[in-house]
Structure formats: C-alpha cells, structure tokens
Length: 111
Image: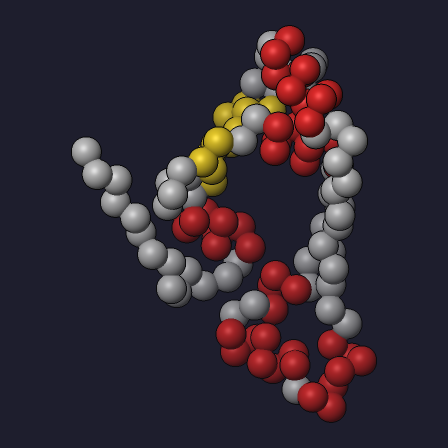
C-alpha cells in the first residue's frame, strides 16, 4: 500500500516535504518546577494533557499528512493519507488533545 494516490501527490511530497524535520513534542517535567506551582496552573487552564503527551510519532506519515493538507478560515483541516481522508475540526482537535474548547470562535462562511 502506498502513501499517495497519484504521482502528483508523491512529487509534491518529494519536492517540498520529504526533507523537512518533524520535531517531537516536548513534555514538561513538572517535578523540576514543583516550587513554582506550574503543574497546578497548567491543570487549572486545562493544558496539562497537551504538555504531558508521551506518544510515539511517525515522521513519514506526518510529512505525508502535511503534504496533502487543505484548510480554510475556521473550517476543517483536510488531508488524505493512504486513501484515508482525515478531517479535523477545532472541536475534534480539542477532543483528541483532551483540552477544553473554551474560547473557540466559529467562523461562518459568507455565501
């Protein structure tokens, strides 16, 4: 099974994305900062799940995702990898990261 459904998609990936670095997320070790109360602060803001992610990353798949991504103001992020369409709304990103959606602004498209 291939990552791309067309030669054009592969060429775009090869020319613009294949050599880009994928940097893994940085987790905060709160034990080093226990005297400052950062863990409680991040917890109260609902950001603790974002700064304590310990998941593996797959750089080739990340690059393939970004090489096919499209998005609009306030709309979903769309991409296709291995013929699977991936659709991410602001709300779904909040659910995935287990963070509150407080403050999300919904943009209405003008017809």
